[in-house]
Length: 541
Image (cartoon, rainbow, N blue to C red; front, side, top):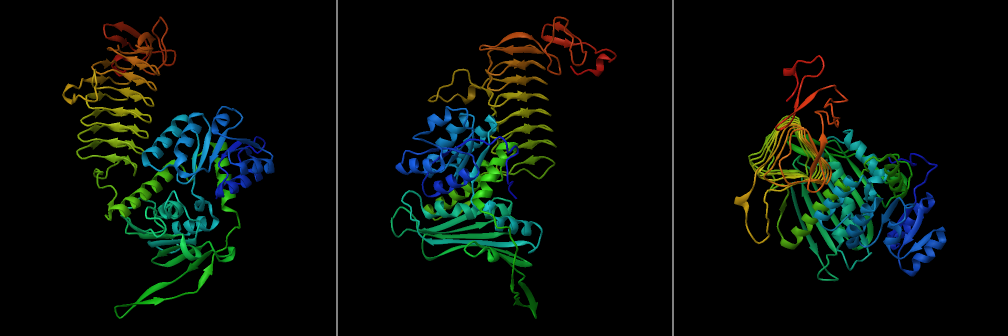
């Protein structure tokens, strides 16, 4: 369940709310109730009245908020097409952000926000409200506990008369809530998505859609949404092989979640339905929006990833885009059709990562969100690739290498064991690139020797060698060979000292202050002598 308070209740954050439309008014009320609303950012006349009601500032644009250090977070409830740019600006300003769904309209923009939040150390949470509804939380708990057996089928109806939209169709307006819940129950992305839609009021905007999902586990699902329906209906039906659950949000609290212990019995080879009365599941009566904002405040206070973080939102966005594409083309969208999964091994590849054919991955290696390993690359054991890394093709990486977010290792680059690559550092493989000239046959080789560390945003110009255990400072631009154990900073990079195997800067005596290891200068940089009491052949070279 969501936390009911921030970690330190004596220090309440100050939050700016961007947008005070239909849903923004609800957010303003809840934020004010929790004593964290500091400003409403909206030039509309009603924003002034709302700001006066809650005794907070009213601002016309985000620039004034982003420049103030006393605002630590922003909540974005503006039109969907503005979410990406506003969230990006908030993150760049070093503030936490809560964005109403969808986090962006394009998957690439959402992925950029996820990487930016991680790089800046900020909380990015997306408003998938029903994941904080007590009925859904209890339903998911029952599914996870096996109360209805193996999951077989999930479907949802989200129907109403209005609220009609002119900018986004009903799929994008209504279905994200249901997709978020279904993907949370499935615990995997669908393999196949297809959708149909009908437009009655405006030929460009669908008023009703049906989306079908097929999962590798055998689970099937559909989502039916419409804003041209005579009555309001918000139902999620979950069917297992030993029972069923019904989440009906239109019912009073005592009937919102029902457990049906229906079963199928076989008599003389014929299936017969064995029906049972529905049993209400007791729930805590908590406003979902209040619980959602509590969860955001808790994440801000503890720096823990929110339940509906950017990665969860990206999964929903990918399915929405697939459904939209299917509606427009009439074709089934096959997820993962371009992604090769290597044979199962004792390594980890996140579901959002792509691994091409003819790739070798060593035991214990971990490849995280949205990374891509291109063909014919060889990766050693116990390597770690952060989010949004790209490797290859034809790249060789040794054992124990670590890659922070947004690192690309291009063809022509080879890394020996235990190399560290900081966030957003850059390897090049062409000396004089031009967009209009193809130079793939002119790639220059780059070799990074064992144990070297390359700092954040550093650039390694191709054709050079980084010596063993060298340390390249953040933002440095390496334009030539680097000696072993050299400490390099600046643009162009210059040597300003020496470092030991453990990364400690060495004084003139060339003795590591951490380990006592002794070094001596040699033509290729430093060479390690024996540490006190340690045979020379026992020390790594």
